[in-house]
Length: 71
Length: 257
Image (tube, rainbow over all chains, first blue to last red; front, side, top):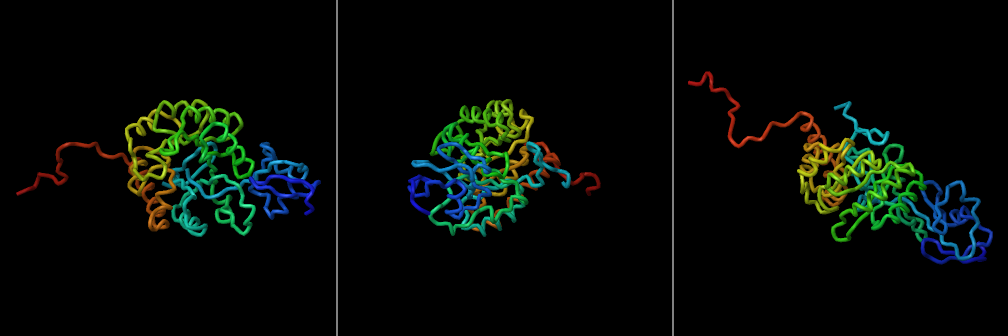
C-alpha cells in the first residue's frame, strides 16, 4: 500500500494510501470484519460503513474485538 | 429440573452458572472448562485487536456464539463515559445487546462506583441495551438499577477474584427478597460450596471466573461448580429445615425396649 497519509491504528502510527477506506485498512491488516468494532476518531462505525469511510491524514482508528475476561 | 429455566431480558438459559473467560492458560483450556461447567452464558472483555501479530487466534473461534450467549463486559472502566464507550463498542462488534455493566470505583477493591453505575445503566437501557449491572450487595442500589430498567441485578459476593465466598449473606438475602428481577451473584466465590450457598440463599444464578480459571485443575473445578450450583438450586427449591439449637431424634422412641 502506498504511504500517502499517516494515521494512527490502535495507538500506533502507520502509513496508508490516501484514498483507502476503513475496509481497505482491515483487509490490509488481515482482520475479519465479523465480530470487530471500529472507532474512527471516537465515532463508532456501522459495519456497513467500513467500505465507504475514507481515511484521512491524522485519523485515529481503534479496532477492537472480544478477548477472555470475567470481571 | 427440566423446566427450571432462567429468563433474563428475553433470553432463556438452562444453566444457572455464568462463567468468565479470563485467566486461562490458552483457548483450548478455556473451551474445555466452559464445556465442563455446562454454562450457557459466557462473559468476555472488549480490547484492542493485536494488529502487529495477526497469528493470534480469536476467542470466539473457540466459543461458538450460536452455542453460547456471549456477555461482553465493561471491565476496567472507572467512569461512566468509558463504560458507555465500551458497551457501545461491544454491541458494534455484533454478538448481542447484552452488556455486563461495570463502573469501577477503586483499583484495589474493584468495588463498583454505584452512582456511576446507575447513571450508565439508565443511558444504556434507553439505547436498547440489556443491562446486567455488577453492583455492590446494597439492596437500595439494586432497586435503583431495576427502576432504571435493568432486567437482572448482579451483586458481588466478595471482591472480584478474591475467593472469599459469600461475605454478607444477609444483605444478599434481603436483595433476593426485595428485588423482583433475577439476581445473579457475581464475583468473589472461591469453591463449589460458595456457589451452592449463593443458590441456597435464593440467587437465580452465579457468575464466576477466577474460582475456576485459577484452580489447580480448572476443568475439574468447572464441573464442581456446575454441581455446586445445581445442588444449591435444588436445596433452595426443596426448602431447608429451620435451624434449632437442640437435637430432635429422627428415630422413634416407640417400640424401644
